Amino acid sequence: MALETSALATKIKEAFDRQSDKGISDDKKNKDMEKARKEIADEIAEAIETFVKSGTVTVDTGIAVSTTGSAAAQSGFTTSTGTGSIS
Image (cartoon, rainbow, N blue to C red; front, side, top):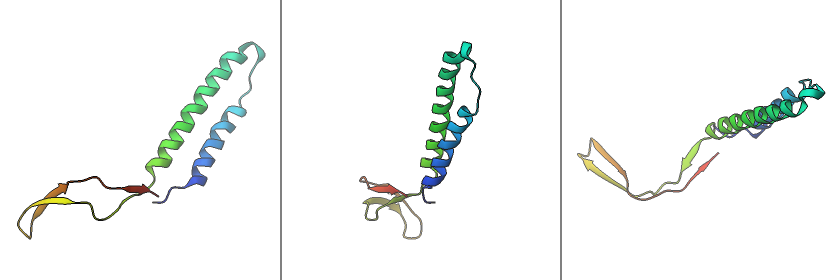
């Protein structure tokens, strides 16, 4: 699945909107602002994690492998690193 930048932007805006909509009294302003910053940071971190995990990892072909078994039932593993991309 392709990365959806617009969905990430929506989630970040929603995090700011939720905090902006809260009323803050003068006597609790500093404490409430620190709490709001923490909540925004948590929501943005969650949105970014969801965004990154929604991507598809595509690995280039041609990675060397080592296999064992018969022609009909092989198992194996890569023997070198590959290059991939998230889309």
